[in-house]
Length: 414
Image (cartoon, rainbow, N blue to C red; front, side, top):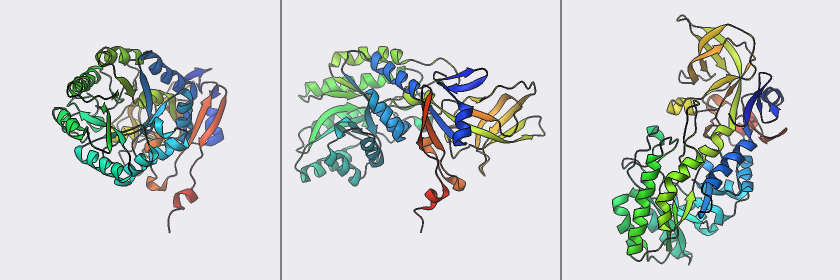
């Protein structure tokens, strides 16, 4: 659990008891370990060592300002997937030259925003998008750095909802069409073809898809060099997975060892876009038990005050998260239970068939490895307010997002 451990049977985040945080800020509550984020960021940076590289943290994983500012302080740049994420990056202190703009459906307004700011690179998804960028750039009398996103038709071997590198997915241009597209757009007045981009999916725990994707764009870069088109970087995306169930997964060192031999011969700088791998294990969702209901089949429902409005992943992907009691009690009453939320949906289930000590109303549970795609995907369904978020640094902690109120929720309504 890295930054999370037990002290006298009580779950801690670094030097702070989780029960203390729940008492102070109520539940549901997101808690993040700054030390874990720093350690995981540095592990990637160190793994790629002296090879020219830049780590553009994927804001889509967790874009809370406090998290983004922490990553910036560690030396990260930013990967934004919308105009809103560009604004978040700027407010977190990133300068435009540290922002890569990615996304399959960039609007004209978002493209204009990125061009006017002068972001490092726009990762272009299609010929049509290249045309729009070129037109907007020429209107402004400027040239825009772009990288063409290539779809290598590689199966990420993760959940189909988060696989992005197959030819049936909506992302990028087909690998066999990319060379001709680059040749046609290389001399456009408003474009500077600066790189190639690929990203085959998320929560990848088998390195072969990442190696195959890297091989595809390295081969394309060499073909472009033969055509007299010189680019300066390869963006190999992100996607490196984390262990949600305690099983062994590739480390940052394994990742670097897999892709560096492939890209080294190109001589091109690397852009990496990790998100989940850095922040996933650095967060937990705290929730209190509301009720325990026995079922006719001998199992039970443990009903907690967090659900799909706070953590959508189990409902959206069938994702597994370990769920642990914050305080280990002395009860010997073992039960098999579904841990469910309070929402008016049968799918509002955080975990099925979990073996637990029978809890009591008011007991605290921690949903582990919830730092990525947790708070950032939260919703107000059933008019529930967004949870607070806390960042722990050693023995100190601070609220980096206060709990939303019903007045906040209704402030935009007439």
